[in-house]
Image (cartoon, rainbow, N blue to C red; front, side, top):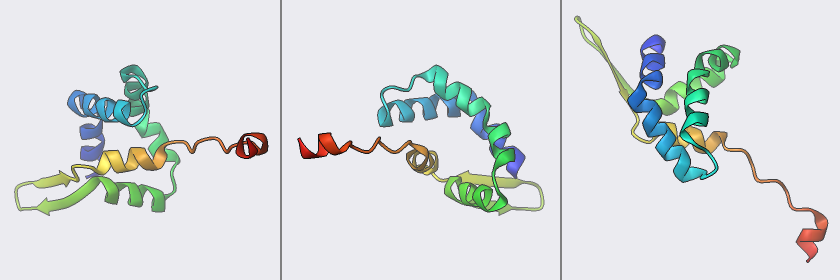
Length: 101
């Protein structure tokens, strides 16, 4: 199942969709940056703790249907967007002078 998920996340249509959503969330991102990030998912995945891997899988996958002939994985329509929002860097805290001014 994880290999199927990795294949889907690397598919050109998925990368293009993620790039489009990422640009809406953060206009400073471009398609090249998102494409590079998506191609590095395997290396990043291997560095995550199992609990974090499980949490991400639960964010992305809605349902797994197992039949005698195949396995169908249904992804959550907004799963990648929720994950991207969680991974967005926090804005820099204001300095005391900016907060007072």
